[in-house]
Length: 336
Image (cartoon, rainbow, N blue to C red; front, side, top):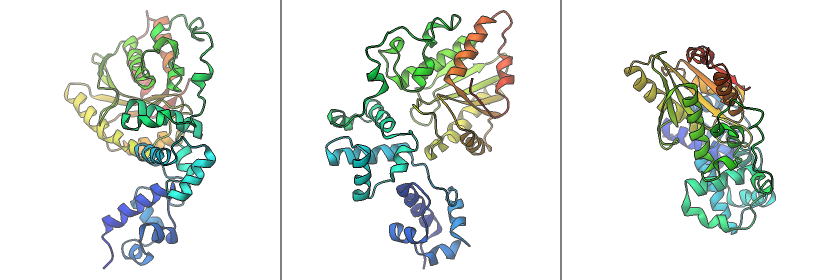
């Protein structure tokens, strides 16, 4: 008897995560032990198996959940007793059978950016790997190279209507620590400043614990206008890339939407704030949330959020929150 349908799907997904792409017949049998005859028992083609597993047939890169990726990277560091260069990482991947180099670098854009995110992950979420912070091999970050520069924020004078607490929000979104927020972890600072931005717009904001667990970062409520916004903030140096782990969005989109609707707020938007976004990710997330009560999905860059807040204050005599209700309707990226 062949393996069960569920076991084959589970092994197929695990194989795809390890490779950083969907596997072919030979690779699937070699790594996962799944024979073509077992696939044929349940699916007409290998592509049909890929689709049922939630993957795109013939895609070159399958996003790996970040926690799995960073755990695997930590094991490579511990094995080498250093933080690997690109060449060392490639060799370690080949020797240890880890995820592909593309799987490691694609979400961040480069090995240097991967290291920056990895360092933040250890400092904020996984202190058990703090030994790695003492290793050699860390890339020089943009933050370190600008340590001797002026502490004056570059946008302060050009944005006279923007509250001081929001100056440099765009830099925070890229993981660049601002002198205005030097006492806070950059991820926490960005999440809190995004919440502050919605307070400046006139929303009632309920913080939910900076994205820990199956919760968004915060909820922004406009009770009089009968709409609410579920907010999730993402710090990424090279722009946000939707990962498979972000299917959790569906879980808390449903939970928070129903919570708001039961409290008399019928219209609910889902907003992700970051340094940059891709249209393909907006399409994917819109499909993921299609069965939820969400009215629209919006990606808003930090620079666009700064502009929205500044304009609302500049025109405070005429600004109304209902304008944002109208602006958020329809799935879109608000980039500037």
